[in-house]
Amino acid sequence: MAKVIAVPPIPGVEDLLTLMAFLADSKSCSERLKELESVRSEINSLIERVGKADEIEALRTKADQAHEDAKNALAEASRKAAELISSAEETLGDARAKIDVERKNLSDERASHLQAMEQDKEILSIKASDLAAREENLSKKTAEVASQADAASKLAREADDKMTRLRNAGVL
Image (cartoon, rainbow, N blue to C red):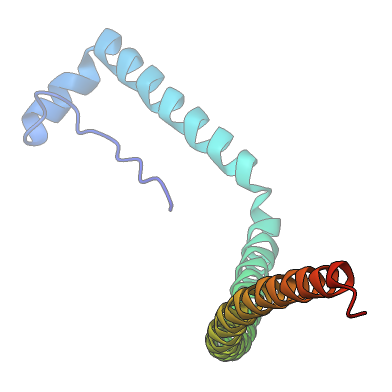
């Protein structure tokens, strides 16, 4: 933005008579002239910062071109950023879809395993009941065999006793 430098009016000069009085006073004139020369040197230093007078238009054109290039670069960067954001959002959507599929697969697999475990529990429960019934049946049969063994042992003793009596009686 260009800096505007205004030259302040001469204090006390309002018309031709006051101007003539000012010009007649050499001290006031020389002070005012020094102020003007100081403003002029400031203006010249500002102009020198920008460039020589014959180069100002070229510098302005160059600055305008640099500004246009910067605008174009910014537009291109914005376009690329939009593409990257779009691509990232698409990739994120794909990743979320894959995660959802994997979660469903894991959930289905878990449900399948839980169902298999429940079936295994039922089978084990049935086998445990069957085993308990077999053990009870075996216990009864063992008790029955033991009872029969006792009865057979008793019969064998009785038969031994009868044989011994028959031998003693000389029958045998």
